[in-house]
Image (cartoon, rainbow, N blue to C red; front, top):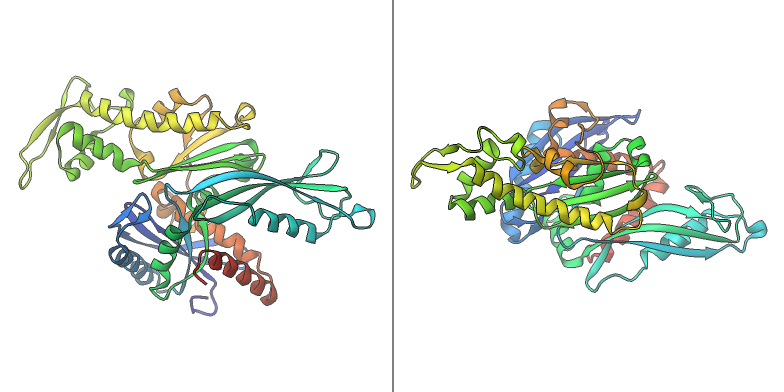
Length: 413
């Protein structure tokens, strides 16, 4: 696929607010994924995971892909692309079809009919569908099943989680890649990809919330009974904590970022040093050495982080599934490394919270232990599922047709 014919290579690409990342892995015949390397470049002119200067952002994508090629000796012609941004919307849809076959036997075409109905659901003006994720099917007796084919029922109901985004913004991100002569083989919502990296099947079944704390956005997704029941993207991330330090302490952004990383905390129990003391910020060109109070740093950072977590909590508590939710909340992402996050989250949420574990991949485990890579590593797992659902050239043709239709809906095919 990426032209070493004896190897099946998959590449995941994320255009984030702080960096662009391209992860390369080999998909082996036994279904295992072996990470070969990760290319990275700093993002410029990407705000809240949305491109605001096409040429500059495209240069960053080019640099990340080149870095990945040099590290892995693989020529990248196709990628799986992570999609995010504060414009992303989601909703649940309940659809019904009636079974008129002999004995009311449910056939595969009934499932395809429901999937087609899901893809045709009305969206907000200017939006395009990203995912139609099946939750479960329900028979006329009220019983729930994941695979109703062969069962008898006069009526079949399907429940879907639908994810959509502003068409033009999706187009911009996809074109940014395709104009580099790199095809977008498929795409996925970033947080959906992240969940594939950090959640086990058991956790998905028991119930789990994944919160990915990025530089420009914080996105979250909920599994219950093995299905996605809710998701959201907020245009607030780790950079906002830094910007608050800039405004509150009158610091340059670089100095505020350094202060956040080295001495910052969002909970007093994890604060570096005595709250009554000060932190000395070293001087540099055009900046004189200064001392700032630790209490001020804590107050500023905690206020922003608490506000963000409370918004997510309020959204979750407003959902119909929440009273029955008995799972845990798993934090990941680069901004999840801020001191005190778990302590603060434990005070805000009514269920257990923890830092998500590493992504199970073979190869260099140094990549798996970096939470800021959870999205691209999860996207590799998503790619594996898609690849394994292509058992023959004919099926591959149908998959290409499906992806082609999705890209056509975005005006890109």
